[in-house]
Structures are given as C-alpha cells and as structure tokens.
Image (cartoon, rainbow, N blue to C red; front, side):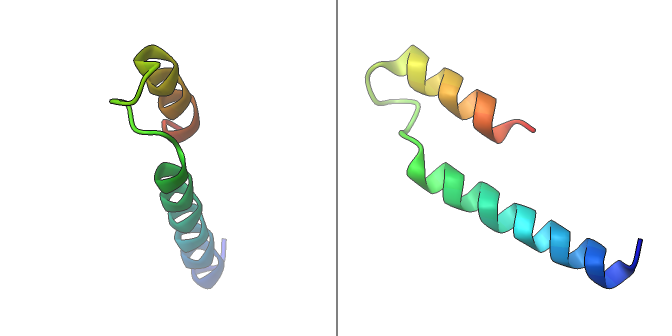
Length: 45
C-alpha cells in the first residue's frame, strides 16, 4: 500500500474515533452499564 494512502487512512481513522469518543456519553452517566457497553462496542475496534 502506498505510504501516503496508509498515512491518510490512519489519520482519518483517528479523527473518526476521536469524534465518536466525544459524542458518546461518559461511562459515568446513568445508565452506566449501557454507556459502558456502547463505548466498548464503538471504540474497541
């Protein structure tokens, strides 16, 4: 894979993950188990 493309995809993935992390409710907000599950499902690959 072209190094420029690999760098671009890595950068895009980091931006998307950051945006998702900011928009998901914190694990400390009720209902805690639901929010933990949501964050785990979305942010852990």
